[in-house]
Length: 190
Image (cartoon, rainbow, N blue to C red; front, side):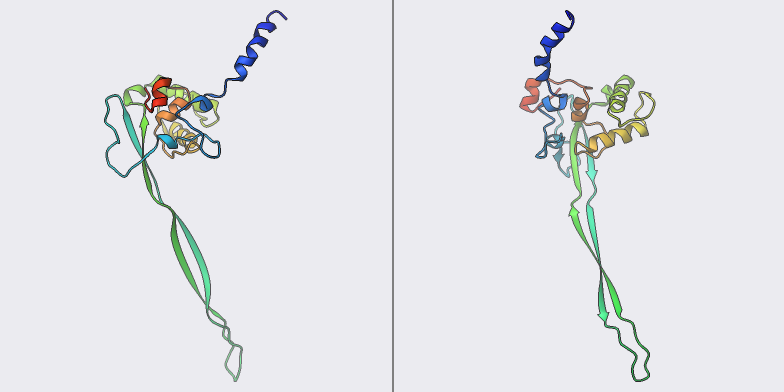
């Protein structure tokens, strides 16, 4: 009972602690309450990153346009019954196909850990974090291989980024990089 009392005293303090994602000022929930990288994505068709500050690394991702295809069969000629010795003729139809863009192609830029940070230990930590969340099923190799990239894409897709390149926001979400809270609230990160 003695060892239980100090733990019970901590419960009110722990109850106020949410998940890292709910506390992260850079990984804000969207209108539906789900976590999103949207505030960190910069939409631009430019071929160069939005910033060239020292110590900042960027990557881009292109989301292809989404098309919707409607197929309609229209009757061109009605069926004709047999008469006066002429055989019956079936109705004649024409297929009309229409396509429309549901979502335009989009290019986004996002911050990413710099190549020097992507060490085997860091990638191993990424694999462990994805494994713990059920996205990665491979061996912990410390190599950014195809299974690791596929798991990363699945994880980031739920955050609104379809990319196999690790976003800095994802690294923060997974607890792989730290940042200064005061800088984060001002829009910067380390």
